[in-house]
Image 1 (tube, rainbow, N blue to C red):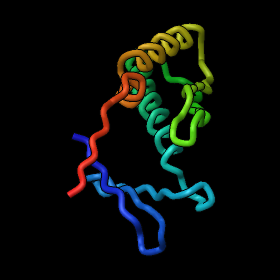
Image 2: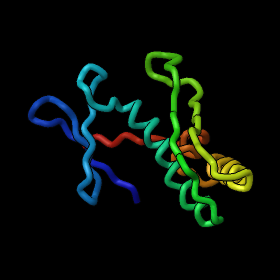
Image 3: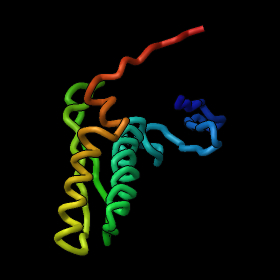
Image 4: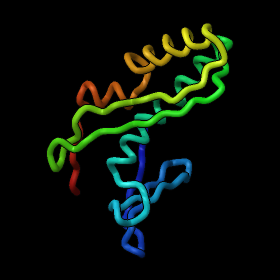
Length: 129
């Protein structure tokens, strides 16, 4: 089970903490920290990249550079439009290009939990004690 605690801090900001103690500060765009929407995009990008990297390496291909941009526009005040995942890679060979493309497509279509959840519309339940 994945679990994150989010709480307001004494300085009026917000802090997310996972079960291992890692933390991420968040707030509004003017606060100089990630907004919740940016964290959603980062989660999608992170899911892709941490899955693509080991799968390409496992197939004997170490990419020279592996980065990505994830972007989306708000189409309503409380809803994003389509999300675009754009890789920025430097490949050492044509063979690496073939492996990378196959892996990236497979990760997008099948293995990225965050992406699959967004595309399939995971139910969000609210519990108020």
